[in-house]
Image 1 (cartoon, rainbow, N blue to C red):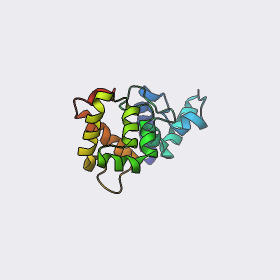
Image 2 (tube, rainbow, N blue to C red):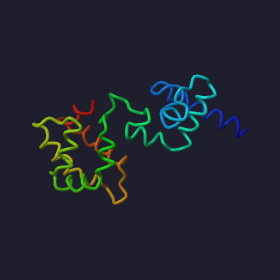
Image 3 (tube, rainbow, N blue to C red):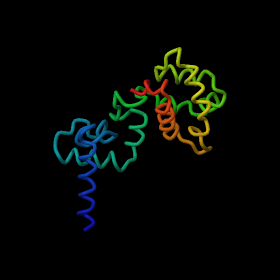
Length: 159
């Protein structure tokens, strides 16, 4: 019975990621280990590697390992920037100004006339984005997207 359930889960995972990232999804298994997979069993092994090593979440958040979606909100390295600059970004967001906050706005593509609004939105939503000391780059990224979606001036930058 366990084998049937496991097979069904693997088949469902493979099918759900097939549309966006190919038969094995995105991740380390697809991009490195089974890079030129063309047989069904190679796709299964790549999907298993992607799913069991926990790298798909990182890849989707950072836009790496073949998980980049060009028209996704804040695509183009924003997640990696947040990952590398989380603490200074939190400090600048609390102030509503600063180098890191300006760099994030530039990376997102916020135009000069909307930067003051961006800074103000980041400052006024500091408690939402950086809710606790345990905030991760992934949660900060998602919260920034959510905050920007709610702002008419900033939603246009989400793609």
